[in-house]
Image (cartoon, rainbow, N blue to C red; front, side):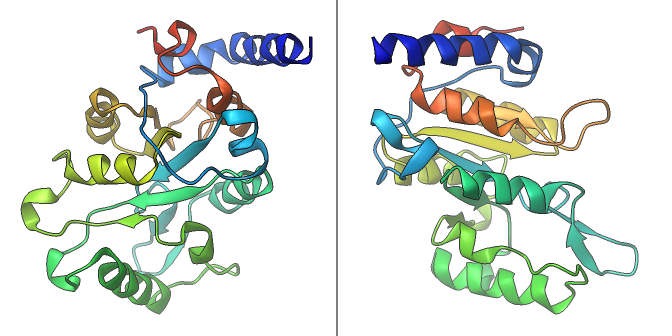
Length: 213
């Protein structure tokens, strides 16, 4: 009885957010196998990992080269954290920055922190080791390599990708991502957190989330 009730709540949530889901989430693909997070993002057999591009998606570089959060980004990351939904980055940096993702991520942090001007520090700790960067210049997005690596690392969890550029969003869809173009006028800045929590508990490949607009 409880399972049926929870399922109905999920469907009602998806229907209520149908305008967003139908147009901004072109498809929801199956992912394969990550350690499942506790709480909303990983409870009762469901989990989701939310990946972002970085520049002009989560952070903005001003004309004076200073770097700050995009509007709403800090609060959005905080809301995902409150639901225990893991987050990651899939972002292009020079492959010469290191021989591993960890080395390139460390250099990325130095570059961002050097010019960081926001009153709130960037939430690097939220991303852990889920920062995927090109090992070679051929792996730079929109090549599929980074999305494939991130999806593999995410195990059986549903994977979400959010970026400000339409071409990256569209490129992630055939690779099994629920995709959302962030930072558009007249749209929510990011995919609503309750929808991500609901998607985490839907069967993979469910028609309600995968229909084309």
